[in-house]
Image 1 (tube, rainbow, N blue to C red):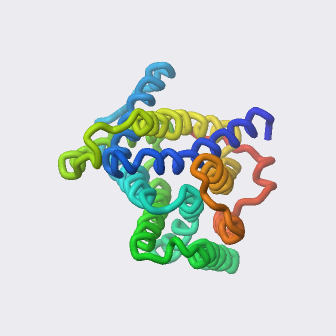
Image 2: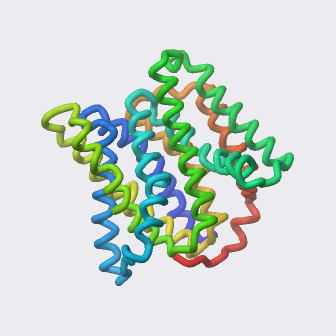
Image 3: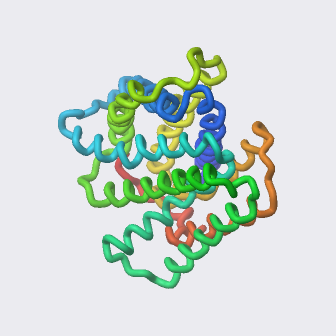
Amino acid sequence: MSAGSIVRLLSLAAIWGASFLFMRLGVPELGPAWLMFGRVFTAALFLALAALAFKRQLPLRQYAGHFMLLSFFNTALPFLLFAYAAQTLTASLLAVLNATAPLWGALIGWVFFRQPMSGKLALGLLLGVSGVAILVGFDAMLADSAALVAIAAAAAAACCYGIATWYTRLAKPVPAFINAHGSMWAASLWLMPLLWIIPLPVSAPSTASLLAVLTLGIICTGVAYLLYFRLVQDLGATPTLTVTFLIPVFGVLWGHLFLQETVGWHTLFGAAIVIAGTMLVTGFSVSALRAPVKEQV
């Protein structure tokens, strides 16, 4: 892996890890629906400008149904669930629960698509469940019912990513940039009706909350996707999975530095076990970093 790829990989992990920080900052004043609509609509505008710059067309008519289905499970619903959970849970815990997405994907594959349950897969799932149990069971602040509902929402968001992964495996291949760009517009359509149903928690959001929306849309979504596409092009999909294991590290770091979140032994130990389980389930190994595979982006 080149020095440039390492920088891009760490930057992507840092950006996606910071998304949970900005959710925590923006959701008290904007609420989950308005915050996430602002995120995806801003990202859609940013990617539209990127498409003009890169001269990439968006075949909306050809892939409209695909965009709507993919965006529901890969963007609109998980973003909304994570934002709801961010009202209660720490950025650290949100980042770790996000890392369980491959575990959900493996479980869905076993239950619905007859994927064999190998020893490595079973151990990975067991480690993932154990890691989350350590994170939740040793934190006294998570004992009340509101926290348990928030944990369930964040877990459901990660499960949505697992569903989206299987959908993209079975669907007709679509270039990654087109998928991301079209998904942002489709997610905006999914979330827009909620703006008429759910009012803003405050009448005049602060500048800090609005900046959180812009940062989530432009940096944590738009720029992050461009970094992701470059990594997939340079390294291939499997080495790019490294970002999944790095996001919790940055999520815990940003939460501690900027939100003064307490990092106990259970946070570090539980996160490490979840990451280990995810690595087993995905079949990731260090040797994969030495074999780049070019993919369509």
